[in-house]
Length: 101
Image (cartoon, rainbow, N blue to C red):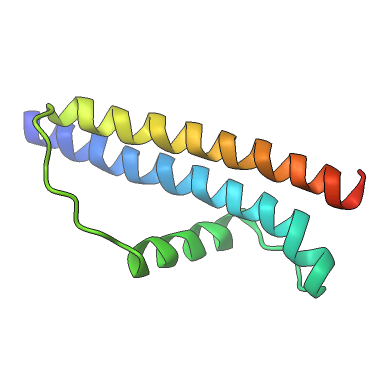
């Protein structure tokens, strides 16, 4: 039963981190790629797929650390959310500077 809980937590972590990356990529795409290259808007689910592809192509092995499974998954979710927020704040600042909106 404990393994099932870990598996569900693992899947939830993948979904949350991919969803955060997808939303961030979709918004950044809309702010910078659409006006410059006149490409169509990238939806959240398509952005999640692109994000997974980028993550797959740029994957780097990191040796395991001495953390419990739950701490590791929680850390991944927290880092993903904060990184998404940071990127959106910096991106919005650049958007205001570049486009004056």
